[in-house]
View 1 (tube, rainbow, N blue to C red):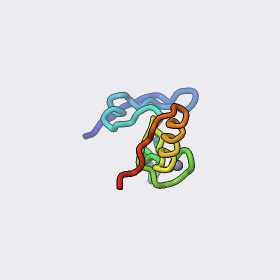
View 2: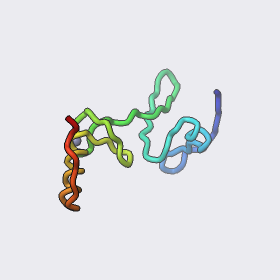
View 3: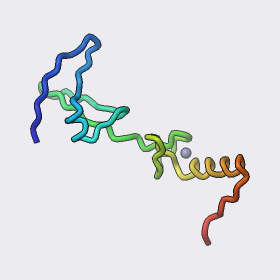
Length: 95
Ligand SMILES: [Zn+2]
């Protein structure tokens, strides 16, 4: 696929990435885009998401909530805190 768009740079140095292109690349609001300049060419790419827990910084995350990664320990602690707040029974691990 080859697409070409032309846009003027605005007063703040921004350019528009057309919705058609963003959609085809799966880029959404809030994504971090990396700009690489090499040998006269500029390449834009989506930065892979950080996979650190937003609570404790643990690099081992398995769950993503509202665009943020959370580790298993913090998820458990959150569930326990909710259970305490609402006085509900949380089943333990299966044996
Ligand atoms: Zn964590």
